[in-house]
Image (tube, rainbow, N blue to C red):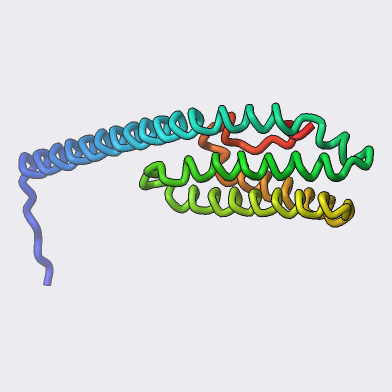
Length: 172
């Protein structure tokens, strides 16, 4: 059976034009959605940075020289400084956790907050270890603290955080 299908060229051209218009409309709406998502992310980052900046500056001011304190055996002083840093850092994290998150970034931010909570716990452990005079144990927790901070940074690399990003140099 050989059946021939007749095509109406005008109808075919109208269908092609409609599909092209539909595709262009979908692409334009996708671009608008992407721009909206980027705007939402930028606003989110700006809100978090406004919260993180005073806390991070306070950490730098209060914890300056802690690395030298550990190297020179002033463990109690270093332990107190890490305790102060843990309280300031914890306040910073508690300040940004309730901020509504961009819908497309919820999973990424959940991972980031997990690492931030780990960092706070490690700072408390560092403080406790150094106050007890256990420098080796404190050094182990410092390594974990730095590693967790690097993982946190990697999780939100595309966000462009400045003050909400982990920088161990703040602890010099």
